[in-house]
Amino acid sequence: MDFLGEGFRRALSLLLSGDREVYGIAFLTFKVAVVATAIACAAGIPTGFLLATRPFWGRRAALTVVNTALAFPTVVVGLLLYGLLSRRGPLGGFGWLYTWQAIVIGDVLLAFPIAAALSAAAVQGVDPRIRRTAETLGAGPWRAAWTVAREARFALAAVITAAFGQTVAEVGAAMIVGGNIRGATRTLTTAVALYAAQGDFGLALALGVVLLLLALLVNVALQVLQGRGGSRG
Amino acid sequence: MVELRAVRHRYEGRVVLDLERFTVTAGAAVAIVGPNGSGKSTLLRLLALLERPSEGDVLLDGRAVWSGAHRGRPALGLRRRVTLVEQRPILLRGTVRENLEFGLRVRGVRRTEVNRVVEDVAARLGITALVGRRRHELSDGEVQRVAVARALGLEPDLLLLDEPVSSADRAAAQTLYRALEEERRRRPLAICLASHQLEDAYRWADDVRALAEGRLSPVTPENLFRVELPLEGANGLKQVRVGAILIATVTDRTGPAILAVPPTDIFVSREPLPSSARNVFTGRVTRLARPRPGAVHVTADVGVELVAVVTEQATRDLALAPGNLVAFAFKASAVRVF
Image (spheres, each protein chain N blue to C red):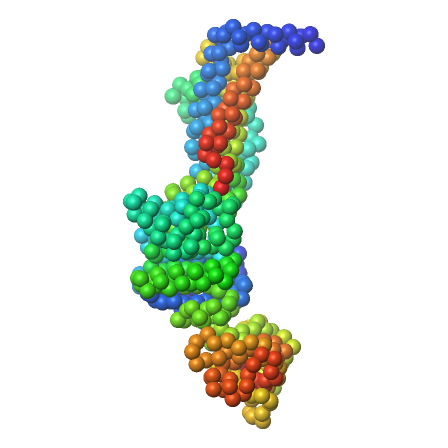
C-alpha cells in the first residue's frame, strides 16, 4: 500500500510545483476536449432535435444507428480514423495523423452520438404542448426550438457534460491517431496509460488527479451557468 | 375565412376526423360540441394550422395552406392569423408577464406597445395581480385565463378555444366570456370554441355544431348516441338499444354508428297519446333550460336523457317542471343515423 501513498505525495508535489510537462498535457487535454465537445454538441444537439421532433422517413432507423453508436468501441473508431488519415488513406493529404486535430476528430466521432441521442431523449421529454404553444403564439421554427431547449435546459446541460466527459476521458482513439507524442499529442489519458505502463505511478496518479479536477471544474462551471439561467419554471 | 375540405386525419392508422367541409367565416362565433374523444381538439389543431391533415385541404381566405399539391409548412404570416388555446394550456418558462409578451416579441412589436397591450389584456381578463408570478404559482383556472389573455393580446383573426372554462369557476368563466364578447364588439374576430357543455355553447355561439366520432352531426348536437345497429330488422325498421330503452329507426345500415334524435322532432305531452310515432317513452323532467329567447329545452330521463325543444307557451300549458311526469314521442323516420 506504500506505493499508493507515495504516488499521492508525488502527485501533490508535481501539481504544486507547477510542473511544465504536467500542465502542458493538461492544457492540451482541455483544448482538445473543449473543441471536440463544442463541435460534437453543435452538430449533435440539432440532430437530436430533428430526431425528436421531425417525422421523416427512416427516423426510427436513424435513432437506432445513433443509439448503437453510443457503444462504439473507441479503439475501433481510432483504427478506422487511422485508416482514413494515414498517408495512403483518402484523407491522408491533410497531414492530420499524429496531430491534436486528429484526436479532436476521433473525439467528435465518439461524442456526437452521445450528444444526438441524449438531446433527442431530452427533447422528447419536454411536454409537446410547449412547442405547439410557441408555434401558435407565432414563433418560427428556430424560436420554437429555442423555447423547447429552454424547457430542457437541465437535460441539455447534462448532454454537454456527458459529451465533455467522453472527450476528456477518451484514450483508445487518442492513442492511435494522436500517437502519444511528448509535447505534441500527449493527453492526460494517454500519458496516464504510458506512465503507468512504465511504472511511474506517481506521475500517472498526478495526471489522473488533474483529469478529475478538470472534469470537476467543467461540471461546476456548467452548474453555475444553469443556476444563472434560473432553476424555476 | 378558414375552411377544411374533404379532410381525413389519422393517428396511427385510425381515422379520428372525417369532414367533408368545415368552415369558420370571418367574425363568426362557432361552438363545436361533442363528447370526449369526438375529435374536437384534433379539429382545432388542424384549424390552427399546427397539424397537417392526413388527407384533404386546408384553406385560409380561399387560398390553399395545406393541400395535395402544397404540403410544406404554412407561411409564418398565415399561421400568425390564428391562435389556439389548448384544453389544458401550458405556460412557457418565465413569469406570466413574459408569457403575455412572448407572441408580441416574436412579432417584433415595440417595447412600449408590448407594455400597453400586456397591461390592457391583463386588466380585461382580471389577471393583473398575477403578472409577476410563475407557472407553478398558479392554479389551473388561472393558467387558463392567462392562456386566453396571451392569445387575445395577439389580436388574431381567428381565436380557437378548447374547453376554455373547464377549470374556471363561474365568476372566472363569466369574466372570460365577457372579455371575448367585448373583443368581438371592438374588432372583427372569429371564435371557434370546443366544449362539451351544450348550454354554454348555445348561450354564447351563433352557430353550434356537433362532432361525434370525428364526423359532423347532420342535426343539432343534443340526443346523440353511439350505438351498434343490428343486422336484422322488419321492413327496414330496426330496434336499437340506447341506455335502458329501444329506439326504433329506419335504416339499412349495420354495425357501429351515431344515432341522432332532433329535439324539434320530439312531441311532448303529459301522458302517451295515440299516434303514428314508433317511439314513445315516459319519464320525469330533469331540467329546463332557455338558451335562446322563446325556446325551452326540456330534458327528461326516459331511460336515457333526451332533450326536446318546445315553446314557452307549451311549457306553461303542459306545466313542465323538474320532477313532473312527461311523455316524449317521435317517429322512427325522424331518427337520423350517420
